[in-house]
Length: 562
Image 1 (cartoon, rainbow, N blue to C red):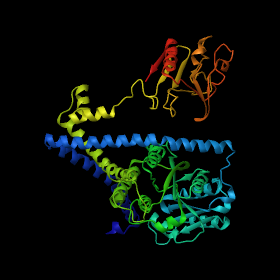
Image 2 (image 1 turned 60 degrees about the vertical axis):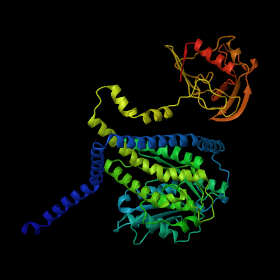
Image 3 (image 1 turned 90 degrees about the horizontal axis):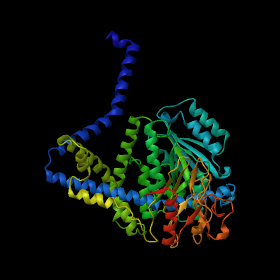
Image 4 (image 1 turned 120 degrees about the vertical axis):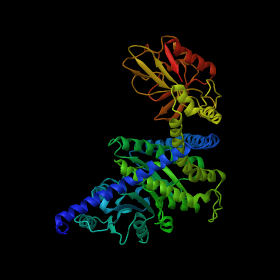
């Protein structure tokens, strides 16, 4: 009794209990996942061979479909990314002058949402960054900081309020009785600010200085656009191996999957941060606090009402990735549960008629079915496929590499068909309008190594093959030279180029196309056409020219590697 009455021992006991509770809170989800894998693996070890074959077919078919959709989204993302790069180049060349005059821009509310106990160390930095670095007319933007906290945090709260008193375009709002991001936003939506656009950001984000301007330009360019979702880039990608992998994942999601899906199926999604909404729509939608991922829910509810959401690669923000495995696991479990919850609620969009007199075409419905049902199921099926493979290794561990290959790829006849369908190399000769398989050219010499790429650039009937210039150093025939000035053409050999097409490029965008003539060459001893400068491309536009073109390089000790 006396030991418990000692305040220091009581504090120490409470500290130990708190640490144990935090440990259980952090690692219980991980232990549950391990238990899930162990149970599933043991279950497969007692299944009949016929049942195993059925499971195998389901899992492998789903994986093949998911992989095919990823490839399709990546291909479809090329055009929007190319358009974004062209727009960026045009603005940069124009001295960072955008199409719309400053006095014609829309009024913008930029909202930063914070849970103060967790983000008290970074919130002042984010406020100063937003005030000092965002390039937008000051009379048309207001920085709104919405935060909730279970207890007063001083002197931080006083510092924020003092700063807001000095800067009129900064507003600090402590949301009463709030326990979530959704509560904070819904409180803000009840306030009339006169803004036409509302931008939503989590507290760990840095928006690119021109990010808001790019988003507003998209609204002004198309009155039908209701939401612009930007690209999120991981800022601390070099902190740990985990953050590096998350950075790769985010680039895949925001640079290819989202714009590719929008181009392929005709709909985009607000993903929670770095999103810009038309204010009346967002105030009407609000956030559903009962949803774990209220952002995805709001995006799907907007889609059900016929709202148009687009993805703009130039609207960039930088965010922090979890640096420890427990925090990463906690984040992904919440995302997984939230996506499952939102998918279960909104999967009806794939087949139900819209209640807002807006039509969804068959392709959009299929895209929603793919996203909300097949993709969600695929995550669980992939984990089950892993358990199935582990059970195979336990019950019949392969003794040779061939046995391992057969176990993984060709355990059942269906696997062979799926492998053949997935492995579909392009033929050597292809019709003129098809995409071409990339080639590399390498010169086998001691003093120089020359590389080039023949990418899929053909978008007209007459352009069949291309050699892309990779650098300004010794840019000869689109080849990159390392360590030596290599003469590719002796006197008289330039005749093989006559009649071919030169497409003059600038940062990947075609500006003109000219035919190579004998007068195009300089008398320099190298036989380099005057047109073949940096970023120019040569296009042999007949099969005969293509063969002569390749034969020439092969005669000069080049290897063609597909």
